[in-house]
Length: 573
Image (cartoon, rainbow, N blue to C red; front, side):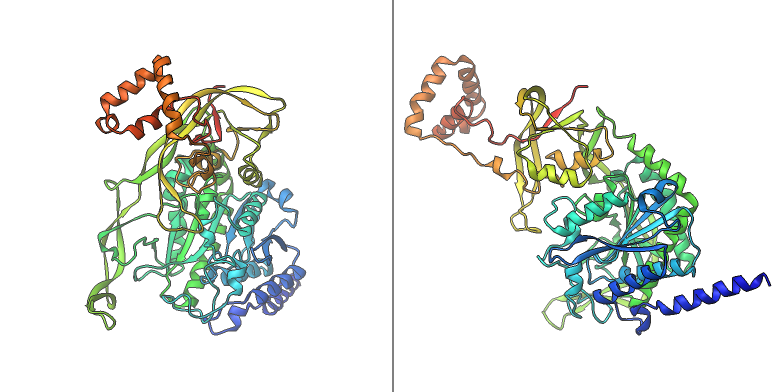
């Protein structure tokens, strides 16, 4: 008789499972769910199961809802439930033409709710059902010209044609603001961003980007790359899917080797790593059948869930230990380059790359011969080294006039304190010495790069209501990557401060000639520096316009705000 309750439970589970077949499963294996079908599925699932919650937590640029689905085995609130658990956070549909994760996550949440798969005791699973809603609604069957299914899918750009996987720092979209708010609410330990690859052809269905180990930090980077990820990929191979790091080449062949991808903070895992969160970008291969890709995505998420269940305490402790590396007064790397002397030999399973005359042009074209599969050793360049470092300050001081920056810091739960009264503070300040700018627009910006600064020490008066931002907080890496102008994805490089690059006041040469002559006559310090510049710079010595401009810029008449970076550093305790 004791078997009856178990049999009854299994029967009910089967009935509930049958009632919640996904639109993908109802199709022919090459069809993805629509936005409306996805929402209806999750709403019904949440009504049937107390372990599932489904709620709107943000908005797309077109005002459509960004929804979060959560499986919480304790049935408590997220805040209460995470006390003795780790949180796995999944992002889907950032590029809706790559919908594998949307369909796979629907099945995963259903299987957890119905008990088809083992229910974790120590993991909460939260997922953005579809991040780029407007892109998902822009449904078509042609924009992914290189992709093998599904029959219809969404479009890469959102309603304002932004690629959301370049917007995690500059935050031009409502989507990005919503993601940051959701991320800070969920406070995950592990993150997965589901994609589909482009590039070369090879035998693998599953490729991946591990959060760059150097950016993630020594403790977490070593643990994730050398232990956790290797176990996950081993489990995936047992499921029938061999894997390889994302093949980051285009219009070339991987046979000569390739580098691991550097996911700077503009990307999803680059952003999440700023808060000590382990992250993987799943990149299923575009030319493999949709059904295989969905299954591989499902299996990797499930394997990650099971690994966290077994190791949640270790992961939590590694995150705590990793944060300890970023102490006030220690060095922080803000620029990196690939170390081509360090690599790992991997057994790469590809197809022979060949060339034949193009039917379109008179040139030879690349093609991959799938009848000529191979397995051979290639070099995986997997190490980056720092090229520029700065000292982590005690505080940043941010004038209240920089409200755009302050708003983003608040969204990201950065602690800051308003100055109570007008105060004189000794600070380090930067002047922009040099930078380069892209010649064509990139995601709505003419991005700066190779930025170089001059450091100055000065006492400055700050107003009541300006902000002190301490660096002894969880968001220390976020602050360093956004507020240090030389960092690749700094707010400066994303054009937040371009107004400081242009002078607001000038001089008329025929008027200032007399003033400059008087300055050189009466100010020995300026005169000495002027003569030294002429002696050391032959071009300057024969350029009257440059000489007059030099005197102007070394005088009190020159505006002090030109090229002055308007965020300041306090370096003493």
